[in-house]
Image 1 (cartoon, rainbow, N blue to C red):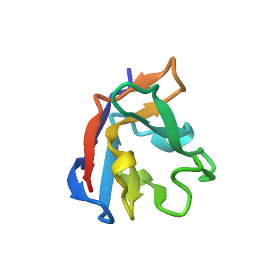
Image 2 (image 1 turned 90 degrees about the horizontal axis):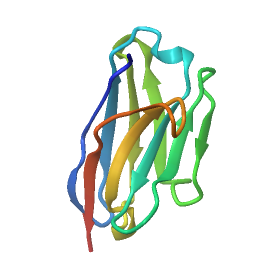
Image 3 (image 1 turned 90 degrees about the vertical axis):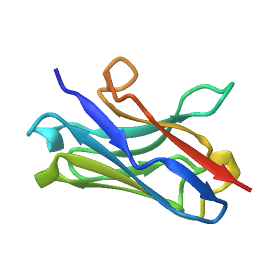
Length: 114
């Protein structure tokens, strides 16, 4: 079974940047869409960004213009570059393949201070 491992979270001031990484344990990484979700305390998990097998990208309205999802097939890694971070971006960020019923990583905490 595919395993996903996220990293790159941390504490940053508002306006700062972070780059999250999601490494998959399979070499066919690019054949399936990969999503980044996030879940803030007391809130439902929400889709932040997606990159399809064709390399097309999708962003939630809250992420448009600030976040960029990309993929390095040689490294089996999907990235989420987050710029102009806001306190409301504070959440645990999860990597996912296969939708809500698919494979999830363990999550990485992002905390944005005001």
